Image 1: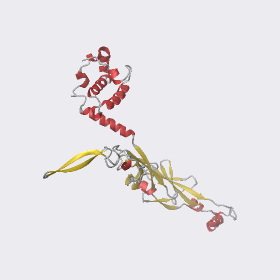
Image 2 (image 1 turned 120 degrees about the horizontal axis):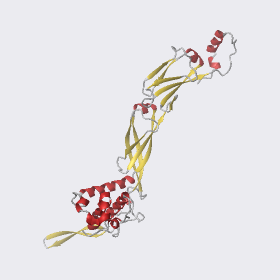
Image 3 (image 1 turned 30 degrees about the vertical axis):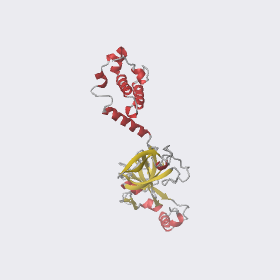
Image 4 (image 1 turned 180 degrees about the horizontal axis):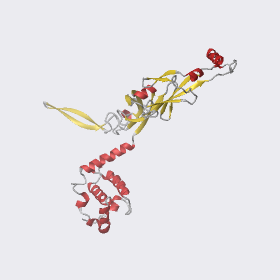
Length: 343
C-alpha cells in the first residue's frame, strides 16, 4: 500500500477535530460520488481517509506510522466496498438533512370558543400558498427541457412501408430547452403568465379536550412535503369568564341585598354542566374579596373554577333615620332601583 496523505485528501489540518473531518468528508463525498459523475478511485480514497481520521485509534496509528500501519480490514471492516448500501443510506440521509433545512413553516390561527376548547373539537382550516408555476418555469413544455423531440418519418420501399423514429431539434425552443413567457403567443394555462399560482388546501385539525389558550400543534401539509403548518389556538371567552393563570374565573354580579342575605345562582360551565352556587346556607356574608373555589373545573387539567363577586353598592345615601334599622332595610328593598346602579 502506497503511503497516502489522508489530511490532504480530506483537505483538513492535522489538528482538525472529528467534526471538521466529518464536515469535509460530507462535502467531498457529495462532490466526488460516482452517481454524480465523480471518479470512483477518488471517492474510495475519500472514504478511506474518513474512516481513519474519524476514528481516534486509527488516527493515532496513522500519525505514528502512516497508512502502512493501517490494515484494509481496519478501515472497511466487513463492508464489501465503500459503495455498499451504507453509503447509499448516507446520501439518502444527507439529502434528507438538506430537505429539512428547506422546510417552510406556515402560521395559521384557529379561533375556538370556550366550550370547544374544553370538550375538544375538529376545525377545518384553509391554507393558501403561492408557489412558483412549474408549467412555465422557462422549461420548454414541448421537449420538457430536453432540447430534442421525436419525429416519425415514413418511407415506402417497394411493397413495404417503413417508419423510422428520429430525434430532431425542438422547433418551439430552437433547441435551447428554454422558452420565455415574453414570447408572443405563449400563454401559461396554469398561471396566465404570472409565474405564480395559488395552491389551496382544506384539512381538518383535531384539538384535544381542555385545549389551552396559545396551544400550538404542527401538521404536515397534505400535498407539499416541505411545508409544515403551525396551528395556534386562540380561545374566545364568553361574558363573565376570564382566565387567571391556570384557573378559569367567573364573575358574578350581585346586589347588596344578595350580598347580605345570601343568594343562589347557576353557572353554565363550558363542559355543558350547570354548577349551582348556594350561598343561602352560609353564615358569612359575601364580601368583595370573597372567592369560591371549585377544584377540577378549570380549563386545564388539575385547575379550578374561581367564582368572584362584583357587588353593586348604593350610588347615594338613603334619606331615612339611620337609628331605625328595620325601617332603613325596608326602604333599601323598596327603593333598590333608585339607590343602586345595577350591572
